[in-house]
Length: 218
Image 1 (cartoon, rainbow, N blue to C red):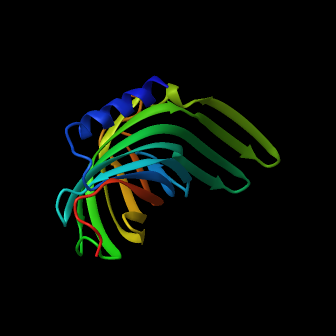
Image 2 (tube, rainbow, N blue to C red; image 1 turned 90 degrees about the vertical axis):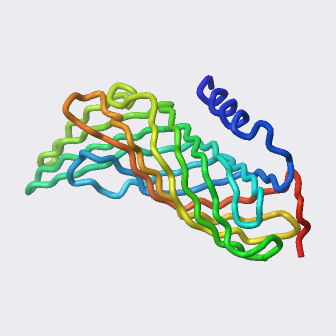
């Protein structure tokens, strides 16, 4: 809860002094594939996130914004097999992520469809999670479980980049579809001589509603 409040304060401070003109806010939800560097035999690992997005468009083609998201089931999944023996490792991590974005919008104010590109820095706060190692030999499986906070550091920093489009549902209300990539730049591992940085690629869908506007729709 303290980390959630801190992230909200950071978001509010970023937007302090910005007028309510061309400012919009709304919910967002997404799914993705998560992994970490430094692991071998990495397998597909779905992740999900839910939160809100804030966008301020100060001219026709440019804007800034920020998200606040709870991101679940991040981490990594690996699996090795050798005959009738196998070993599978799963690390599940829940993060509070706060990406800051600079947008470039194609088209003009009032266009029904506006493609966009964006990029910016991203903060991540580890909230929790579990690890599980399953070693199987024949019909016998041994399981070792642990806490993700014991193997990962609490703060993540990196960048986000993506592309998408905004589709106008009605006056100043937009459906947002984004393809996004998150790239951690710091070593999250508590283990010496290992560099494990977070990665995630996914799709988010959301709706933004106006908090104010300068230029009316066509």
